[in-house]
Length: 261
Image (cartoon, rainbow, N blue to C red):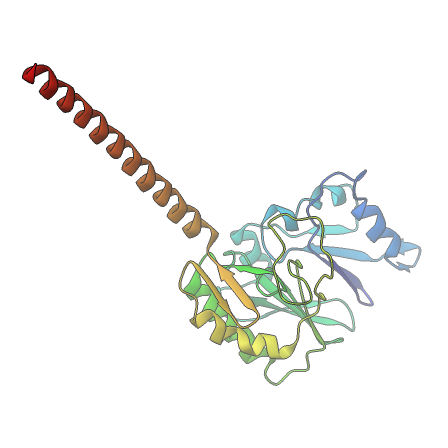
């Protein structure tokens, strides 16, 4: 989750994986951090890199604040709010007051994915599109097109850091187990402009299931799950068929023995 503060408005990117304020008091923490303008807290805009629950579970915590607007996470809400008339092409801007944030459509991991570029700091916020973790690809062609657009976008712009939504690897580049809560020697969060520029080549090498290209690990979880299910089914059918053939052979052998007696 990232909070950017301008002179007239603040921007919160993602609300995380925990809904309950007792476990994660996100809204109260953010409101405490916001500066006051004329005895009122600065207006806050809450957006998402994409619609997956682990990036929006905390939305409800902001419902009772009058100075907060939460942008919808479905594709229609995303397109409508940013006025993307030719999705996933074009750029949008968020004016925070003396601080402009560009919004770049980056579907591929998810159809609603967008990335944010803060012109004031050169920070590029890439959600699950690019991060030091597994790159889960739902739509390879869309992901490649997004990677090419972002690479073209950053080519002539200063990039201080690229900040994604997760860390799932250690400093040696080895991935932690799924849903691991123990991350010894964790990889740094920040990635670089070079990583953005290298991403299109990596995605072009993706075989549609699981590919490691340099420091990028890409996979299509649904395809892997289907392939695993098919493999289990084939093995089960083979086992059943083997057992059936064995039983039939035993019966024939018994019948043959009985006939000879």
